[in-house]
Image (tube, rainbow, N blue to C red; front, side, top):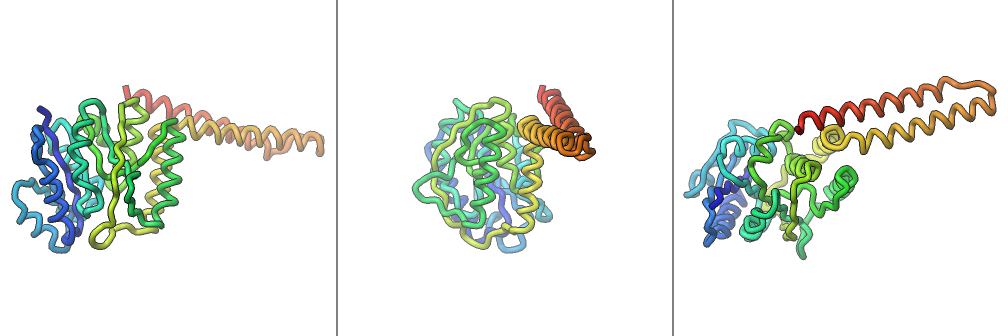
Length: 286
């Protein structure tokens, strides 16, 4: 019998948290596994903390100040001794009744993800372009079709997250990083279609801050997982551009220009940077 921790990161969710945890409790009825519900209160400034302490049968981890979604999950993983971790948001957006299905499939997989591809998916419009770009970039890096890159409802073996704990950011890109870790290391991932509901309460998403975080995430994905998939194509384009520039200068001006030479040298440097990054990744993953 496996031990499973259901981790619920919470920040200012007084309108939804009681119902969300009740839904989780109801979903666990009849399951034979050893479960615990862990709510991580991330420095909430509303009545969330008081509500959490009024709920029986859960473990509460308190952050003295707001540290971030990923920080909450990392802390819960470090303090847990479970075999599996289930994560679900505390804002009522994810269907807790899917937990038994995900748990049932976890024995044959390293991670099972609730993919937001069901009949009802309420996704804010302003988040869709960035998600689309990030998903397709991740698919390019992994050469794998990814129905949902950063779903916040999933189950995974705790040892996977513990092994790569230092790679995970403190912010919202925890789930994206975990997906990339699994796919780039040949781990088995299964996706289960789920609905995604409109959140209760005010969103903590900040467009400008999250755009900066999104740009940083693209860089992290490139460096940490498949650097050659990005650096080599860039190097090839610059190299061909440099050759074309040198050829043009030689034909029209009867000389080799400095611009073409610089492009070729830059291309070589970028290629070596990609190779070096790839070697570092393979060395640290052994």
